Structures are given as structure tokens and as C-alpha cells.
Amino acid sequence: MFGIWGHEKAAEITYYGLHALQHRGQEGAGIVVSDGETLKLHRDLGLVNDVFKRTSFSELAGHAAIGHVRYTTQEDRGIDSVQPLLFRSQTNSMALAEVGNIMNSHKLRGELEDEGSILQTQSDTELLAHLMKRNGKDVTQESIIEALQQFTGAYAYLILQEDKMHVALDPRGIRPLSIGKLGNAYIVASETCAIDLVGGTFEREVLPGELITISDKAIESTRFTLREQRKVCAMEYVYLSRPDSDLNHVNVHASRKKMGKELAKEAPIEADVVTGVPDSSISAAIGYAEQSGLPYEMGIIKNRYVGRTFIQPSQTLREQGVKLKLAPVRGIVEGKRIVMIDDSIVRGTTSKRIVRMLKEAGAKEVHVRIASPAIENPCFYGIDMSTKKELIAANHSIKEIGDIIEADSVAFLSAEGLEQAIIKDKTIHQGICNACMTGDYPVVDNEQTNRSYMK
Ligand code: 5GP
Ligand code: SF4
Ligand code: MG
Image 1 (cartoon, rainbow, N blue to C red):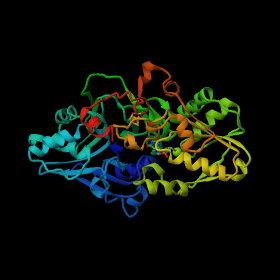
Image 2: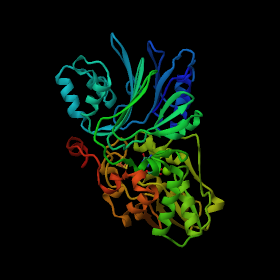
Image 3: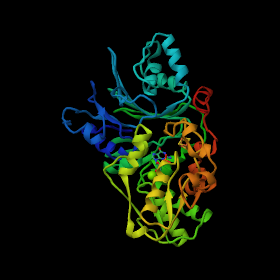
Image 4: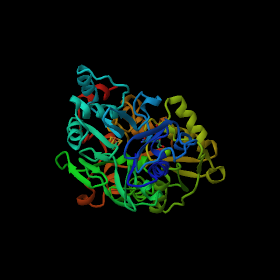
């Protein structure tokens, strides 16, 4: 998500901002711009570059804009769910963009449908729109707060009206969201790398349970829940975010390197070289090499023109994706004992293919070291790890995982090691969510837990 208020090239800057956030979603992209009188939307399925290929930004003139790149966590994959969503009424319009997941959405949808609402999509974004407008209310800070207080889950929202932009973050601050400035304009972005890319400066994090309203007159902040301890998603550091972003005042690359170092302390092994799976595991591999004293080598290279494997729809496509994407460097791996670092194991698909690939290229031994704890639980907060059935670590012991992925040995970073790599000072950084690894969920809702936990 990216938003800007108070800049004459709002849509164009949002477009560049979305480029910096492209790794967060590749299924669709969209921008809504306000010129103070009307809202205009352009969105489509595909990458940012493709969606705006034929767009002339003079047609998207305005001083404020919000944009979104889509990464689907539900079955809803059509154009109708590409955000921002734009809602028009006789008096005014609004556009909404969301990151995250509302756990009690099924119940809230049922209530709205009983009252006569007809929803078009499966998305939580549309749900917020209906809740805000319930009983014919105007969209104000009060109606937004009333709606958000009905939600259980993890979310970040951008709401654009003709004359205002609202920014909201869930009570635990599970999803990242930062505020920046570009001259006099305000920027909001899921990651700080987008603020950097457009030449802005970081101002501060959006706080857990905070609602910020920006207009030409003022920037106002209020808290819609009691102050709760922050629990930033650990997977943002492990895998999802870009290494040049700082989340909650911690640089992502630095935290990954530390994960690698901790891993080397916890799970050393006699070997010749350390290699990482590009791109997300390189930082951890460098850390492992530095700590262990083994040389870091580029044993695997990546074809940059193939998208992220995990985000593709089906298992068969995912498997093909991995094949297309990575290749061994024979001259480096041949005859060697390799420590292969990956950031995480979800289904085990990636690790298994890479072990095989390295062995086919002549590696003598392949020792898999994973820079995060085993993922044994589903995520209810907007990251698509799907169901328990598919998680290899939920169904197999570490020894069995080693056999399945055909590694000579396998080890995972401990939950303590991960926390140490991310949190330097508890008074500043508070806590992390690591529920998918430990089962310790910071936000629970029986509806979702019952529906999908044991699938
Ligand atoms: P697997 O192949 O075990 O199902 O998935 C793990 C691999 O997918 C890792 O190499 C990781 O970099 C990549 N990956 C892509 N998207 C995600 C995600 O959303 N979460 C996690 N944990 N890994 C992901
Ligand atoms: Fe992130 Fe895992 Fe928590 Fe989901 S459960 S928010 S992926 S740490
Ligand atoms: Mg990877």
C-alpha cells in the first residue's frame, strides 16, 4: 500500500511507490487519485508496469492518491478484487485499500446481508466500506472507528475521500505501516523502501490502533483501541519485506544477517562453503558465513524475470516456477560440502528442489539450514501459508523433513534466536508475532480458528 497527500503529481509518485512495493504482490495493481472534487480509479490484473503501461498521468491529475499491489490470500482472484476499491454515492465517494485479514468477516458479512447489503467481493475491504456506511452514515473518523472496533484481525487501511485521507493500523500493529514526508506532502507506505524510492524522508511508524486523518487543514491522530503491545509479523523480517526497508526501527537486511549468525551458533556443521537461495536468503547466508568462518559463495543464481514462486496460484504452477527460477553454479558446488541457507520452509517444495539441483550439479553433501523456526501453524493475519495440511513441519518431524527434502542434515533457527535477531530493545520494539512458528497467536477469533485451523 502506498498513499500521498498534498502533491501535484500524486498519482505518478504513487506509481513509483508501488514499484518499490511490487515484491509484496504481483496479481494486480491500482491507483485512485483525488483532485478535490472527484475520485478517479485505474486498476487491473498484473504487475505495476503492465497495469500502467498505457496510462497518461495527466488523466490521473490530483493532489492525493492511494495505491495497492495485490497478493491474494483468498479464492477471489478476479479484477473485482484488485484494489483500491472505489465506492460512489450521491454525496461523495471513497476509495479503500487494505493489507491484512479480518478474522470475523464471515459473521460481519452475515449481519450485513441480513440487513439487506449486497456485497460484490470476498474482500475485507468491501466489508469495511459497508460497515462505515451502515445506517446511512457519512464517512467520518467516528464511523471509521465504529467499524474498525468490530474487527478482529490484522490490518492496515488507507481510505481516500475527496478532501481527506485516513490511515489505520490494527491494535497490535501486526502489519507494517510508515509515514514519510516529501516536501510538504505526506506519504504512507507499507515499507520504508517506497518512501526512499520517491525521495521522501521517513517520519514515523503508524502506531498500533492508531487512526490518522490527513487533510489540507491538518493531520490528526487518534487511538481507537487501548494501547496494546506491538506484535510486528516476524515473517516480514524473515521473508516478505525488502532488505532496504526498516520495520519498526529495525533494518530488514540487518535482522536477516543476525538470523544467519544465530543459526550458525545454534546449528554449526563441518562444510566447505555457505550458499543462500536468492534473493531473500542472501542476507542470512552472509550472516551464517561470517559467524562460522566458512566462505560465502554464490552457489545458486536466480532468473530475475520470473516472479516469486510462493505467490502463484497452484501447487503445479509453484513447482514449475521453482524450476524456471533457480540454477546451480556448477563450478562452485561440484565436489563440495555445502551449507544451503533458506529463509523458511513452508511446504518444503523449494528446499527439496534445491537440494536435488545442487546434488545433480555435483555437490558432495548438502546441509540445509533454515533461518527461521519451522512453520507449524496457519497465519490468520494476511500471509498465505494456507492450511495445516500443507505445512510440512505440521505433519513431520525435523528428521522426516530432512529425509523428504533429501538433505544430509537439516536444522531450523529457534524462536529465541529469531526474536534476538529482530528485537534489540523491548522498550522500543516491543514484541513480534511468531504465531505460525510457535502457535502463540496474539489475536484470536473462534470463527476463523474453528473454520480453518484443522483443515
Ligand atoms: P516452500 O517451498 O517450502 O513451500 O516455501 C518456502 C520458500 O518460499 C522460501 O524459499 C521462501 O523464500 C519462499 N516464500 C515465498 N513467499 C513466502 C511467504 O509468504 N512466506 C514464506 N514463509 N515463504 C515464502
Ligand atoms: Fe506473520 Fe506468522 Fe504472525 Fe502470520 S502468524 S502475522 S506470518 S508471524
Ligand atoms: Mg526463497
